[in-house]
Length: 224
Figure (tube, rainbow, N blue to C red):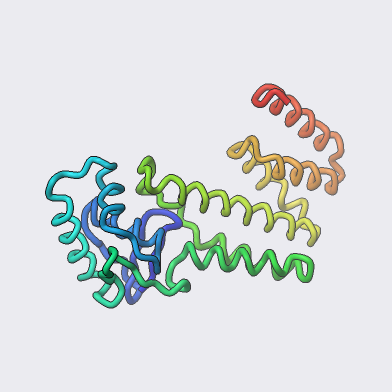
């Protein structure tokens, strides 16, 4: 069974996407996936699911949601412990964990083989189906992990671009970088990569214009 949080919540068994219930059971599964292989107390789950304003029936309702999820993921995967609940998921079966492992592997290989780094980072980025935990935007319990994963995605994109610059793919990178800085306007590394790519394309004047644009942006937005 495969689990996905790099986009909308996803559960796949034997190649088929499963429907695991309504908003609250899905939120419960996402919470347990964020803390995969760790025990999460019932109190914390209740506070998060009901935003610290649980109904009187919250404990019984939580147990019902757990029972519903077990029908999909199995009793050997969703465990009751003395202190709460634990979702046992091999790291290779959770897209977020696979992404982080591949990113770490590629980072370690950076100095040795730019082609391998670019290939592995492309593999990692293909795991993404949108923003992390996309169907729980605004949920306080999801915000921190979503921001962390989305930040790592940008790190992976920048590292892939560095590797491709090393491979002299600057011409092909210019359109991608121009699109990226429109979305991530304060990501200085992307601006620097665009300037370098333009310079290597023989477009020094365009590189200088990008530099001037960034200088103006930083002054207006951050006062620096």
